[in-house]
Structures are given as structure tokens and as C-alpha cells.
Image 1 (cartoon, each protein chain N blue to C red):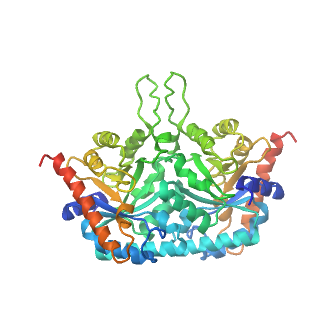
Image 2 (cartoon, chains in turn yellow, orange):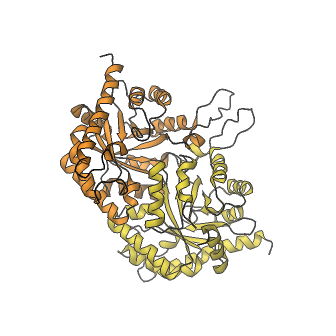
Amino acid sequence: MANWVTRLDDRSLAVDSLACVGLDPDPSLMPVDSVIEFNRAIIDATHDLVCAYKPQLAFYEALGIEGLEALRDTIEHIRQVAPDVIIVGDAKRGDIGSTATAYARAMFEFWDFDVVTVHPYLGGDSVAPFLEYEGRGALVVCRTSNPGARELQDIRLDTGSGERGKMVYERVADAVEEWNVPGTLGLVVGATYPEEMAALRRDHPSLPFLIPGVGRQGGDVYGATRAGANADGRGILVSSSRGVLYASSDPGEYADAARSETEKLRTEINAALQELSGV
Amino acid sequence: MANWVTRLDDRSLAVDSLACVGLDPDPSLMPVDSVIEFNRAIIDATHDLVCAYKPQLAFYEALGIEGLEALRDTIEHIRQVAPDVIIVGDAKRGDIGSTATAYARAMFEFWDFDVVTVHPYLGGDSVAPFLEYEGRGALVVCRTSNPGARELQDIRLDTGSGERGKMVYERVADAVEEWNVPGTLGLVVGATYPEEMAALRRDHPSLPFLIPGVGRQGGDVYGATRAGANADGRGILVSSSRGVLYASSDPGEYADAARSETEKLRTEINAALQELSGV
């Protein structure tokens, strides 16, 4: 199996899309009762438009064992109808030693994700078990777009020399380069700070970026795409969840509405890229 | 329901124990095949000796849906045989917005943990949903004992004034004080650096500390207990997993061996405390 970064690139080229749909089933917003019925309808309506799906594990865990059974069936359905789509397990795990190894086993052997999100705080040996599965890998949380992100991520480090130090999140990105085996690691970078994203892209030209938080979370697709894309105009997963999933609350309309929102997202991304390349 | 910190203190006093047993079922080490049979035997053999149990979610997730069913049954069993024991969900979750809310719902409403471990990297609003359940709370990962811990946790921060700044992990502990509602938050502090733990205790006299990694991970019970205990000689959960669970590989002996190891852990902790108080 080729590495997931190459497979993502192939898929993005094949369907001309850097769009990722987050599969975050929330019973209080879903127009139907069944999570698997809802997810299947969303997937059937959108899979030819996306490079990736991103199930957010929290939403399945909140529904207990039944929710996790729906997650298992959702992944199986994606593999059946769109075997080339990358599946990102948005799990944000992070632990050490035998526990980290057990999480990697869960994510790749049981759930069959291509790549999973992880926390950086415990250092390189906490990420290492996610590099040991052929073709799989991890996206390390680097810069988030929530109000509290600045509390720790934006503290400046002491260089010891009187020179201006890097921020914590920049140090995390540098560490990910050190930990990386090409084709395995990438960064999670929130959409709301395009200038910071552009600086991260300059410093890390080859790492894939997962860009969550466009749509309902207020991120700007145009700015994030232009800031995050690599020299080939790819290398990003621009992800929308609620804006796609809950575009309509009508049980007879929501799948079509999700398709329309996904098409719109793909078009916005591609328009930003075309302008960037001067075409 | 009283807050979990008070309930932990009451339990520690009632059974004269600061010992916590980590429930990390690993089929390659277990002397029996069934996770729930194994956990029930361990719990039945040790519950009068502990203030807390700490299931590590990774080990259940690695076994898929069946593993999670065993986790559910394990928690139910603890509630039946030892209703006053604190159950720590060692999940190390960390996300934002509606996702953080969904994780809190999973941890408290579905799994029924008293307190869960969380990551600090996303800031105060990522921890806030865990403070909204009466009597429950979170232990924030502050200082770990793995080789990679120093990569990010031990970077010194720039004060901007030329004065010596704090380390990232010290800033995390300060942030937890800011986020805290008394009786809800605590810190996870690895056992292998007693001097750093003693400094954290001086700066944070009232936060509970979860101290994992004694036993097989090489942490020193004596040093960690003396460094971590609060002014009352309590306020710590000293946790051992593999050293207790896998003390014997004999199916007829392992429960008794786990009891012996748990008694030994409790005795070591209490001996360190007695010496500390000069008794």
C-alpha cells in the first residue's frame, strides 16, 4: 500500500478536490434518527466530490457502544463505495509507551483509519507508534482556532540568546519535521489565522495540512486555501462538518443539500487555487 | 453528589490508601482470555485496598467493540462492589467546541467516570465542558515521565523582561489553577522526577495529582509520595498498572498476586508519609 500522503494526492488529483467532509453525527441536529442511515446518505451524496472523510470520534463515543457500532459500519460503507477516499480518524489521541501502541492498534487495526489526529504534548515517542503501520500515519495538532488556543500555543520561547524565540506551536511544527518519516506525518492547522498558516507552509513545504473549521466555525476557505496549499497547489485537506451535514433539516432534502454544500466548498477551494496560480 | 476531590479524600481516609490500580488489559500478558473475567478478578481481589481504579481506554479500544463492552461491564462491576471508589477514565482527550462537549458527554454520561485525563494544548475552553458535570472533573496532563516529555514540556518561556521564564509544563499547571473551579481539576504528574513534582506541589498546594508510572515504568513510590502529597499527607493517586495486573501469569494465582502487589504499594506509600510527618 502506498503511503497515505501519496494516496491523498492521487485522490485529490483524480476528483479535482481538496475538500474533506467531517462526519460528526449529532442527534440534536440530524434530520433522521439513525446515525448509520444519516452517514450513508451523506456519503452516497458526496463521495465523488471529496478527497477525504473525517469522522470525529467524540460524536460516536457520546452515543456509547451503539455509536461506535455506527462508526464501524460507516467506515465499512466508505470503503465499499469509495475505496480511494482517505479516512481521517479525528481522535486527537496522545499517550506514551504501551498505551500509545494500543491506541495505534485501535486506530489502524480495529477502525482501519488511514491517518489519525494526535496531540504533540508528550513528544516524539508518543507519536512513534503511529508511524509503524505501512501506508498509515498521523496529523499532529499544531495550531487550533478556538479562543483558548493562544493560552499555550502562542507563548514565545526563550532562545537563551536574547533573540526573538519561536512560539510553542511553531516549535511543535519543527518537532513534527524531526519526527517525520516522509509520507507519514502532517499538521492540523485551524483555518482562522491565514498569516500563521502561510508562515507554517513556508517553513514546512512538504507536510500535509488538515484544515478543520471552515464553514460553521467561521474559517475563511479562500484565505486558508491560499495560505495552506503547497507548491503543487495541493497538500491540504479543507474540512467542513456541520456546514455540510446540517445544511437542511428536512429528511427528504438533507442529502442533496449536503451535496450542494460540498460542491460549493470544492468550487471555492479550486477558485482560490486558480487565482493563486494566475490561471 | 459531593465533588470528586472530596470523595477521593473521603475514600483515601476510609481505607487508609492513596493507591490506585490501573486496569490496562493486555491479552498478550493476561493469564486468562476474557477481559471482563480478568478485570473482575483483579477488582474483587483489590477493591478494599484502593482509593481509585484507572481504566486506560486505549487498551479497551484496541480490542474494538468487544473491548468497549468489557470496559462498560468493568465500570458497572466497580460500582457494585466498591461504590465509593473513584473511577479515573484515563482517556487523555482534548478537543474544542462541540467536540469537547461530546467527549465530556461520552466520559460522564455514557462511561460514568468520576474524573478523566485531558490534554492541555487547546487551552481553557477545551477543558471547560468537563467542569459542567456536578461532582465530576478532569486531571490535566502536565508533566509526563517518558523520554520525549522534555521535547515540549521542558522548553523555557520568554518572560520578555530578561528574567528566567517558566517551563511549558509549569505554565500548564498555572493555567489549570486559572481554569479550576475548586473540586474539579487536578494534574497528571509522572513519578520519575520527584524534584519537579515537589516544586509543583509548593506552587499548587490544593490540586490533586495523579501519579502514574510507578512500578513497571520505573517510578519511585517513596520519592513521588513525599514530593506529591499535600499538607494533609493526601491529595495524590499513586497508580500502578502492569506491576499489579501481571504480577503472576498463573491463572490460579494472579488475583492473589495482584492483591499482594497492591498491599505492597499501599504500604510503601504510607511508610513514606509516616516518615514525612515524623511519626
